Length: 258
Image 1: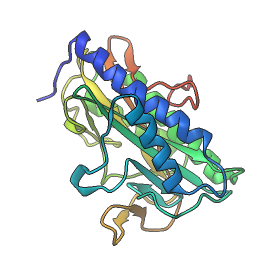
Image 2: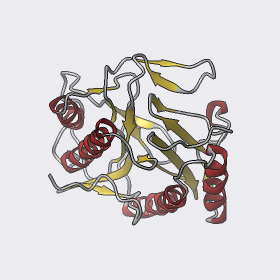
Image 3: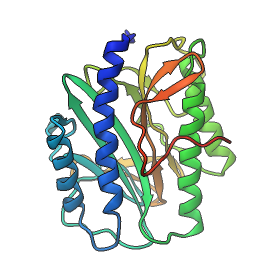
Image 4: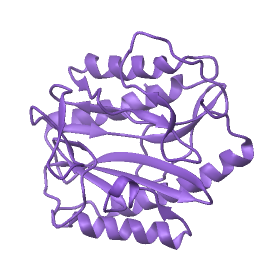
């Protein structure tokens, strides 16, 4: 069952996601060559704890860190550690919080220094896919409309979507119904209604969308070794489109107008 949240609950979800946004701003300010992923993870965790929240990912099914940090061909769920950022690569940071029993979740992929044209295009296209998906997340549309627009945006650019991992509902649990595919699954699915809260997260690759999980049991990589990007916002369905709950001043993503 897909929950419909009251305005009181949505306000709590907005607060949880405001902490996510603040943590993302901290991470963004640290993106430069030579910084370790462990340093970013610790800084993000401090922001979350100082705000009176808990890192939603830490301990979730045994995940050992507060953030997921993934590079280039790593799609999602990279584990922070000694690895240092290098110029020319793209870095995906996924952050979740739990605040007063409600969850926030958002992800963004950054360029570390100057990146090549392919990687920059990949970032732009994935961000655009998220923006378009948020706009169709309005009362009266169907869940599959999100997947259709993400897949169309990807294929028009010559890219592919990851099918093995999906977006999700979010609220009193980190992952709730419904699962949100990033492709047209051939069925309209449930009708979207105002008050549904969704974590929409396109995962798009510069090669094929096939993936595998590394021996650490977490890190998901593209099978062909091509780079991938991951953008995510938690949104609430409204009459005119999705309202972003995890909005951040810096960086800003998921708000393209085209």
